[in-house]
Length: 119
Image (cartoon, rainbow, N blue to C red; front, side, top):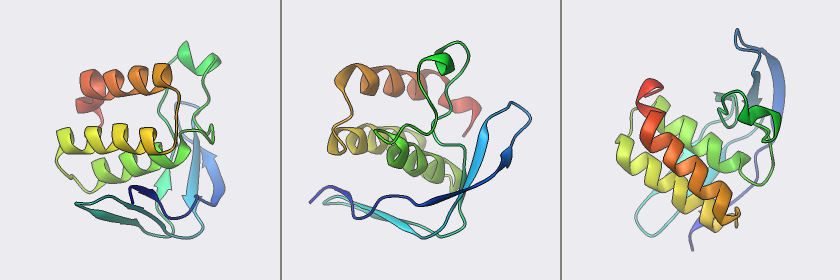
């Protein structure tokens, strides 16, 4: 089965210089598909979905519909997993979490076009 085995439990840490909230995982989360199992360790820090202004006025970084997927993507970039594969796992995870198509499309295009800045 493809998807997350559990939902993230987060602790708010602070706001970064850009005003984004930084969270720490209270416990590990696991994402699996037929090819890979990703274990994101307890205490991993994330800002959720990195959403630039002005989109951040209508889409929230910690929206539960895509929060797990954003944490997975942050982690894969953090450990320098293959960037293209990371982006496609992000898309796959959003499908498994039933994130609406229009949101999946915007997020996927954003990471493919601009993700290199954060990789």
